[in-house]
Amino acid sequence: MRLKSTLRLIAFLLLLHSNLFAQNFWVPDSNFRVKLKQLYPTCFTPQDSMITICSQIQNEISLDLTFLQISSLDGIQYFTSLEHLFCYSNHLTSLPTLPASIIFINCSNNQLNSLPALPTSLLNLNCSEINNEFACFTSIFRLPVLLFESIDQFANFAFIINPLNLRE
Image (tube, rainbow, N blue to C red; front, side):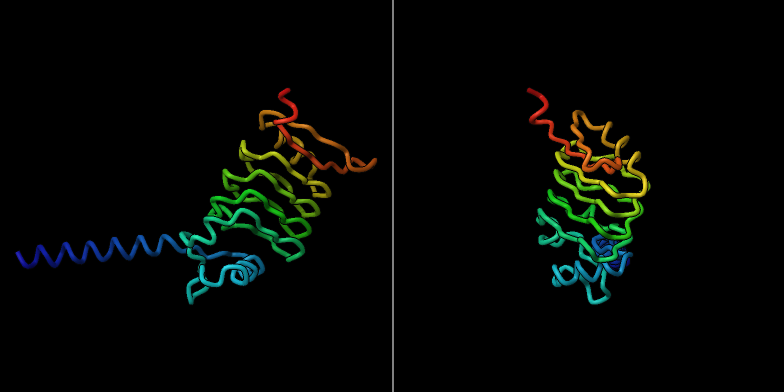
């Protein structure tokens, strides 16, 4: 009987430990990690892992990551309330899966080759001056409605998606 109780306790502690470990995420890009630690110092462990269940991260609605030489935004998916993302003028070659709550993205002036499936909540997307503007152009066609405007005569596009105005 005592052995059974001990085994249950060990199993419970292992389960608890694995759940706690799963709530931390190592942000691979050091520039992104440094900026997040500056903004949310209480949301990082002493080992520099981001605590994904931190309320500051889960409740953030706007994030400005411009001009930081970031090459990866892995970890942005934990910002579950994020609506506005400014990540222009970095070294991004791709974007990870974005939070479903996002309505505005400015990822211009990066080295993007492709975009992920974009959330249907997205209203504004600026992906001008990227390596592959065609990838940006084709990605937005997966959304229900769109409007795009050329920002200059050299075919650099800024895409503005605004379904509310187009559904009239």
